[in-house]
Length: 332
Image 1: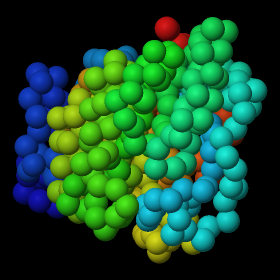
Image 2: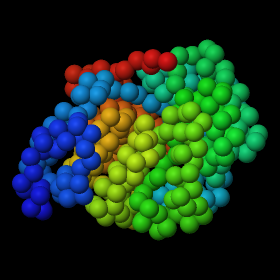
Image 3: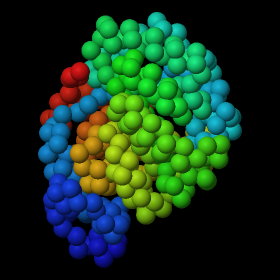
């Protein structure tokens, strides 16, 4: 453990975050390097910030894998990429009724946000039309927020999605700018940043996050949090890599529960007012410590992810209730 991690006053870090000051690199590394005896004080500091902005409310999100496989990109973490030999379903974009059925299921799970995700570099004209048609109907008939994740966007595509009523668009940075070329070569870190900027210009809420456990250093994790603070992403999904057989990162060492909690605390302290969502890998990395994640994060996915399974929705609901927290109802 570093000298800073031994001597830091974690409450003062929380106060610094609440005052709008950015943690220094040394302070960020101290959060990540804190030993197990420091975990509860670190999480308490994160909770002080989380409760200031969100109280004990928990936002729930449900993801729909609207188009699976068939992706020409070479992202090393992804079972749907062209370089993956993982056995995953492969199908073109789901029809309107299937997307509407997914929205109804999101409501049944008490999810306030329904996330429509499609594999690929970016949407074709036909795919964009299909998504917009479904979104228009969902907005007309259901009290749900819609998040779309369709890949790289042009300005006109972002504007059409915004006009159709898409509330939020997700495009993750995934890793640090320094580490990016070791993960993906078919598109650049800068292209991802540009897509998030286009989302912001369209009026949609920008959603962008990371995947932890892809060979990045602790300093790079701090840099990721800095980048998302600078990008001013409203929602920050924090994923923990699930090493999927058949992908280039299949031999990666999973993130441990204690390390995952410290990462979440770091993102809360560096991006204090933002939605921090525990996303893919929550169950496998946090395991029995999942409830503790809500002392830093204020949002979870419920149900399955894109190609990996989640736990039973009733277990998520029970964890939230047992913690004394409350599911936030959708307010459009």
